[in-house]
Length: 501
Image (cartoon, rainbow, N blue to C red):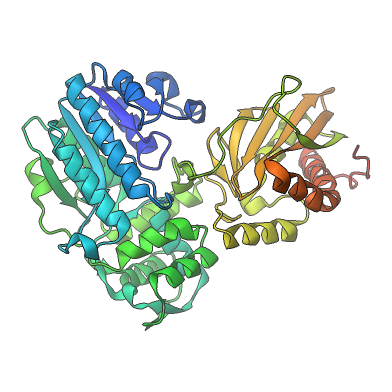
């Protein structure tokens, strides 16, 4: 079939596309930022349409000649008014699919308990409404409703993982005793493919869940057992509201509170599949659905093997700037502040590139890590993503990857790595490294930080933090040089002299 996939830069979409290609389907992708797909291994095997899913003209182009369409868009980080935005997008999507003659829509939503809409969380209510809009569009729609998705890189898994690993004794909210039915991401993808390939007619929602019905406390104990940790001590109390719980999750895990809040809101309510009707249209996998422990074991192995295909942070951050760095010297849109440091490194360009590409995450920032930590805490305090998003892969990056509170904007091995800031700022910021080989064992490394201020606050911000740059940027490039030179020689080298210009 010819299939349209939305949400291709997100966690599920990025994993679904290669499976569709393996099944022999032709895939078209609608993406606001197609450059973020440039290094995906399947990039040259799909057709990409640039545009926003809220734009009828872009959707009309994307829907043309399609047999089916996947609706995989949902913003966990959207702010006030997101329900109106999602209602608008779903209405346009259904309308354009009908006009184009699309034969089926498959939508991944959330499992919804049997409660009046007013008692549902805003995000669960919105996801249910999106399904209703798509089913009423005139295009037969299969809505798959999942609860907690367990897989390497999923927000739910990383929240569970960090809470369990870091806190052997926890004072927990009462929602840890609410029943839930987790499902492995592998099985979610299986149902997404199978739902589109179903040859009969259906226009309804289907709950999908794994074989285990448990609680969040049970998932934490299960994770600890699989990971070889001691059994965790949980002390549930009534005083932790969803808002306080999301702050607590944001403090302990890489998942910012803007994402933790809707996850916590969903965990307050029992989400257990009402039936297994999905088997009527998509038979269970021949090897069976993964149990919770099997899903955790597989996810942990993926993380340990640095084989995480997509991550929750792959998706765009709501409100974060996405404009590329204005290229010099054509920039004429206002002030650009820069901080440039250069030095020659006594190592070949591949060694230096390995160090540059490995920055952030567990490797740190090669200088003043405590200052970066403080900056991350300040960012979280004002609702930003903070520093702890980490990396999808500890050593390799690709365009679109989140890297702490940055995102990879340009990646040209072994000559250029550029990161765009996604922390809360009165302006836009980038940092980049350019490498040039100067002989077999010498590399010229150029580090440039760029800031485009917005208004008076932006100019004030730059001059307020400029004095601290001397404690961050020169040591950073020297630290990179030391690391590369140590890698070049098993015996190591003398420390790099203070020769930064």
